[in-house]
Image (cartoon, rainbow, N blue to C red):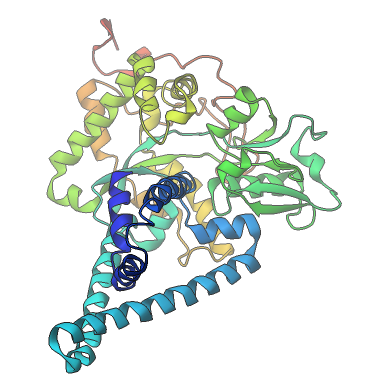
Length: 452
């Protein structure tokens, strides 16, 4: 609160603000000073509310107005905002000219306004450039975890994935608990079309469109996809036939609140993965640092397996996660860190490259990316060398395939629905680790030594 509060408090100490202060003081003296208490309370409430809205949704005010009230009202509000900002800008420069006139004479006001305009332009340019570098994938990041791989590839961001995180994170189609729907195909023939709440452009939309194609649903005829942020999906509002969230929202709806019921999941339609990225320049210039990052990644994975309760406790202290509660975070940790063998984090370039190419094709067909990315493009975005060294240090074998795929799995990438494989729906307990074939030398973990 202090940082944004200081900034917000000083924003109005401008030409129009100071003029307003002076006029109020000259007319009323200290009689209106008590309003400071009221306005301070209002400012704290409003700034806190706006900050929370932005943090939770990741969107600006105009996006939120559009999603809640529609495009027309948003356009009207933005037009009013434009005129308000335009008149404020005129008043600001009028104040600059007036101040220059008081200090340096009449002629100074005509020179001060263009000089001030140029200075403001430079400041805005510097600020916007800084925000761009910090917020976009081209920015000066060192390493990051994320799933926005297609956007990174499309923009030519110089990064490489050295590990995989949360493979097969569950996405589900969730209906209200009293809904008559039992399976996705039950939506066929809906009249009027059933409304599905979904984050458009996300992995959830990709899963749902693939599933709809398999079961014979026609989007636009049987169902309509309504862009809906995760927080709104959690409400399961009246008039919404189903929502398509991902974890942990699925568990919250179905197990905690018990307001929703799953009728379909992502697993037959998409092999999902997140990635752990490292900037390419680090690989070129300081590969030993990247190797340390790879080692630390696997050390953290093993520490979480050994101390899941402590890991959940640390997660619960994070501001963005504390509202979930430790119990839910522990459950998610067990499912998405401890269920598979730790070698599920290995960057299998061919597997994930072919699967991600399906997403790229889907996005290109909808004109959401500018480049037609191939499986080879995605394969080239992985760099398994560092994880190979990490495994060698640990005495682990590099598995021939991801451990969630059964031996001789008959599936072929892109041929849907996929045959069954190991995931949170099919595994009743964590995969055994390590097995003798997983090791190249003796390995000790939690006080016990395992032999190859």
